[in-house]
Length: 338
Image (tube, rainbow, N blue to C red; front, top):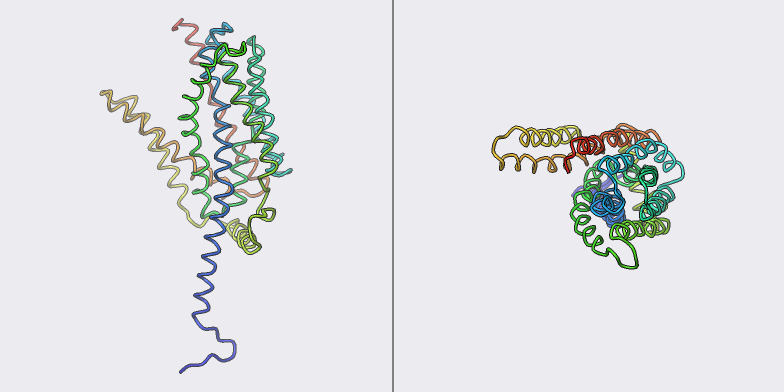
């Protein structure tokens, strides 16, 4: 029977070590996912509700304040200008002061501005607050994406981002009926329904901002709910993943989803049958939402540190430049298509 001599290590020790490392990886990522992703998901739903509730409020606000379609479109679109201009500076500040203070500051200020929309009476006030809301919200999404890159190694990052970004379609499904219900509060305590909408959807962001200060750790080393072994494992694998993205699959997945969305747009525009056009429109969100997670993994795979924070924010700000309803609503006023 062979015996162990000198420095020879039995094969079973290596297998046991691999199993222990796999178990440590599983428990570490499971704990990080459970502690961070549901909370960040909730924050993003709140963010998207405050960003888009103006479209629902407009059902009453435009009538009560006598806003034209052009005035409303300019106010709705100027949000994107403030967002685009301050996206990079906001994310650089977040990278310097830490995600806890950065995200809390963003949420508290955007919640206050969103609630202040209830006091709007003139187009100028509407424009000013919408611009300030864009400034206040700038940096939340890229800051959160940057934050998650400091918690999830490259192999798990797309999975984590998909769980966070799915809040966009869910917030739409929640926001429309919620906003409609809030409009029905019209007349209670002398407030219009659109004023209740802005107030009651702005306050939660302020409250959640203070919860961020108490709940959100800046990095794994500051997470009391991770054991020492879990912190060490996570820090080691984050540093190891910083050298390269070994999957090599994100570019293909992102391009495939973008192509699917483009195919849906073409089908909606060119197919002669209405059912074919509806099917094309259904493909668009499938491609777009499938595109987000692998696409947003690319900046963190190519950039590190403050360069990653700036790069993510720059990509996001450029995307917001195109998001505006101003042109279509100006045409509506010009053609009097009411």
